[in-house]
Length: 439
Image (cartoon, rainbow, N blue to C red; front, side, top):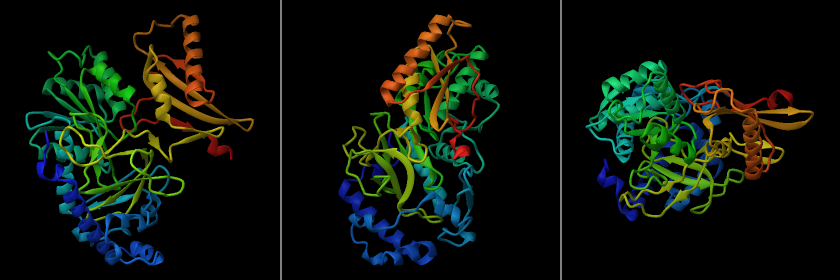
């Protein structure tokens, strides 16, 4: 199902003409209303009227998350505060939060974009959508909520927490679509089993689709969720600084890449080290320019998310280009003994190993001036209690060998009992890096 048939299927020449007009308007707006951008343009000797083609996008300055923090709270706003109807903020775990605002039109556009996303996942007004993303300053909950209402579905604004009660509501209310992080979906699955409920039993649980995002997850994790819960697991992408969820979405027709809604967001892939724009198909850092955002428009925002851009046509009929599944973040990449490692690479190895659960945690430390990585992973629920020591030792050796073979680094493997590792009701904390305290 395509929610906005006209705009989601625009011929490429018409779409690119629209993008150029909106890019030119964006440059005029930020130059006139945001001192930060006026200074950046002037430093480059660039005026808005010099942007005459989409190729000129490469001439524009990058924007980074630190810039939003440096201009906290309203320094990058392009409209007066009394035109702002809502504020959200992203995580401030490494410093000040990044504050983003929305005009009334921004909120309307966001609802339309999330409606597009849910429709791409196959949702419609006949569905009951259970939203277990966090509400509040985090954009996930309200983004999914407004999108669900826009398509006319029934919404359960559950937010995160009270997991067992959520399972009961999903059963009693007849939830057909679940919106949450993929790690929390597995947490709901565990809680359901503890209550004697099985998501795969459609005579009891009506769930058919999951719309999951807010954290990187692998194809192996998708297969695990789908097999354990008996649902179609779909990938949604967004980030607070750009809009929230609804920047890009998979479609049920292919589940092969996420359509970036290019009439609102202009995507690029760059080399994260040099900033050079990369050609289609090459993996690099995703950069997004907001074409319609009014309150906090951003020029060439560096997302730090690693992916690739795919221009090939999709059989769904949408003409918007797709990004590949995110493989990690450039700022979450671990450098261990000179080797670049993404947590998602380790997850892919773990999830493919029979007898293990998808719940894991990576701890990196420095001992005697050498980096050491410990991977703790839970055994599956059906693994024999206590296990056979020889079998556990063999699993440990095999897993260490596979990680060494796949990544080229040595890891200490620790197999732990089910439900030992901490669960998260938001984004899962997969990595603990203790090296910063020992520099």
